[in-house]
Length: 353
Image 1 (cartoon, rainbow, N blue to C red):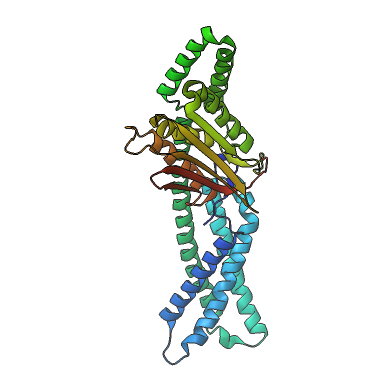
Image 2 (cartoon, rainbow, N blue to C red; image 1 turned 180 degrees about the vertical axis):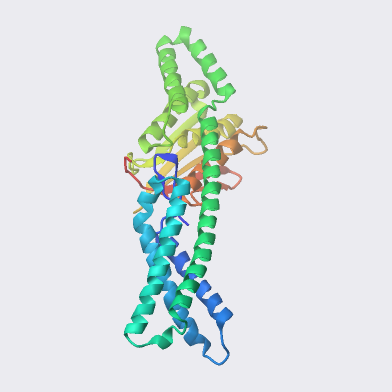
């Protein structure tokens, strides 16, 4: 089920699923029908028609399921503010009470309209059976949602710790090379040396000083451009970065520290291993609802870094995108032997929340 989250803070973890979502409604209807089939099979009398009994049971169970879903859709914002344990307790009590009210309404309607054959139990027996079955089913559902919430919370906390590690991860070789480049420029080109120091300061601030898990696409691209300028000083003509991003909405929101680590990987694991250097292509496009950004670099045949840094950065980015967008295909990798391409696909969300 889909859990809502604050777009700027993945630590805001919803306790209850989004009952207003079509996916959640489909699951509720499917589970309700399975319960109706189970109840009909358990109570089926061979002297009666199975489909007729199933239709009556399904009608009653689906009414409870749909009304309960609508009720949770409306109450969810208030329950979230009550805290995790209290939210589940209140939700359980409200759903059980709603089931009893539906059962009582069904009984009274059949009595008033003279169709008591629809419900063949006595009043007390019908209400008690509804209470017992709904209490058990709702309790199991609440337990499942609670465990699911705790599991997802642990995943979010783990991802946050990895984000913190990624934010603090500046490869030592990059710092050493940057400082050596700056040192060599202090005598030959003091102006460029000063600019390089400012760029390095801005890059460190972007990597270590961010407090939000989301940033604008403009901020991400500016951070990546700063990194490119620093590496350009060291690699010179061996490094070319082509930016094809004119069509992208710069206010779109994206998980922070995404593009710069990918550009760093493209240079470190691609360009640096090629004696003649090469070109990194950063291309982006936007369709009606999604943005797609691809970072592509040439691959040196038979050359490979003996480090897990590339996998660590990719794992962080893949996990954050999956958590942010509930989509395992948000980050795709294509390695055809000549070029290595990482493609990001995410909603074109420009909200400032």
